[in-house]
Length: 428
Image (cartoon, rainbow, N blue to C red; front, side, top):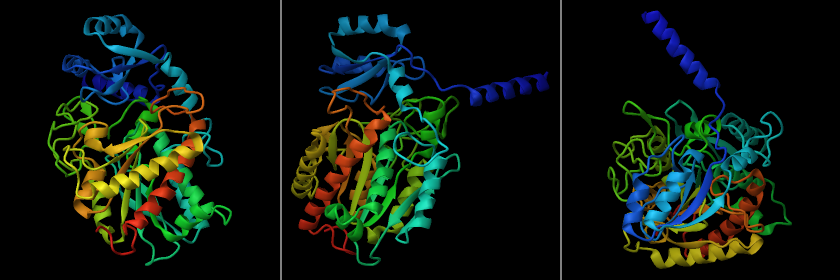
């Protein structure tokens, strides 16, 4: 009997491995305005996950706009909730599977490019190819993952010992695919910029870049192969849950179930049982500390809500460098707007998007005393008005990356004005 049971378990496991990714046929996405606490509590009480409700980003406070995914089996129930709780709602995506299909990698065995989203292995192979091709490139290892993958990035440094350091951490949330794709596009542009692109050539030559395209590699592969909306790591939590929100797990004003995070281990914003419980956040933090004397500025790439955010997330109180950070951020979003007319807003995490504890940029600012900003990329095609949230079609990779690189040029220019980019003198 035991052998039969074991064999059945093996069959279930094999079936789950070979199964097609979860589909979102006829799943609609609505944008809700949370105007009252009663509405907020209703949204927080909804069961989420496969075949249930799901959020692009979880509801956290009144005044917030929330994008919620509705499976067809719950459409009638959802309409009742809208009516009873008097939500202001707008249908923004009629069939989510259409977007998922447009995102799917066309091929992962050809030349690396930006017309598809690639696997972890393909991205890492490309990073190693850059090390072989460019003498200024070194593949760096920023840590490891729960499932044993390496967190790989590149160091681009054309003037060792002379250039100030810029650190870019990308796709710590696994479902935000355009973050890693944009990071790799920017890496390529920095390495190939010519004299006809003097501003990009300047920052390529005179900045010591540490760029990690894909922090949450386990979650990313799970989102590609099993459940597209997966956001967390893949660590085992309790008997039936997996994963921790790795951007709520850093040891900075961390608290289990604190503001902007959840104590429920099955929730998408679960902060973990302890700070740095996740090997991804723990090992990456150790790497950052090992190069702290080389770093002047820290950037985190996310999607998608058209924002540039600065510390703090745990309090509405202004940080020590608020005036300078706001000036830098204002100039940065103005530069980002020029190419594709994409409008960002900017400001501290707490007051601009929502309260949040345990994020990597807040930890960097608190620990290293250097500027640490978060990009929340565009959520729509600025030319057509199509809304796609975090599920950006591959044709959005280049325009998004172009405007972000434009903005980084300006960010660095303003940071130089405030003496944040003096080599070997991080912080102020």
